[in-house]
Every structure is written in C-alpha cells, then in structure tokens.
Length: 41
Image (cartoon, rainbow, N blue to C red):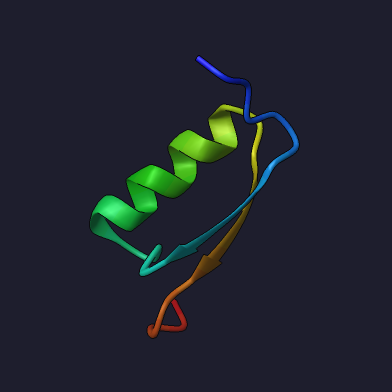
C-alpha cells in the first residue's frame, strides 16, 4: 500500500459516523486531515 504520510485529506461530513471514522483512520496513517461538517460540535 502507498504511504499517505504527510498527504493532505479533506473529509466533508467528518463530524460523525463514517466521516469521523475515516478522519481518524487517515490521521493514524499519517495524513494531515482537515475535517468539515455542518454541525459546529
């Protein structure tokens, strides 16, 4: 698998559910993660 260390990922809908899980997984793999969601919390 290609390394994603240092890559930038924008995750929309990352406040909950699958978006949150994807955000956490990408961060654990070394990506710089930007999370965007309609809810402020």
